[in-house]
Image (cartoon, rainbow, N blue to C red):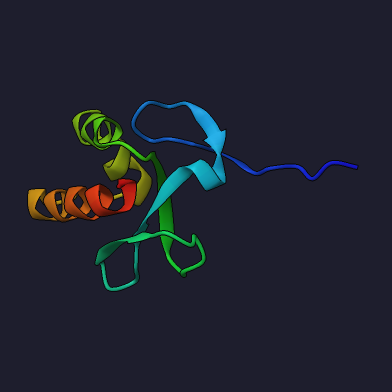
Amino acid sequence: MTKKNPMRMCVGCHEMREKRNLIRVLKMQDNTFCIDPAGRKNGRGAYLCKNLDCLELAVKNHGLERSFKMSIPKEIVAELAEEMKTIAE
């Protein structure tokens, strides 16, 4: 019997991919944002592909704002982009 892999949708490109191939962006209760590489922290999460193009698409199409039900400052997006660069390498 094969194990079923959980699928998640990227909020940037809207493609369904395996959860392990995506990066989880997390909004914690104190309205701070971080990247959760393990995918186990508590908070509201949204998934992005491991490239900056999907982050740009998610910002342009308001995918992250829809997922987190709030507007996201540009400083936070810049911080997430820096964190994604280190993870993608």
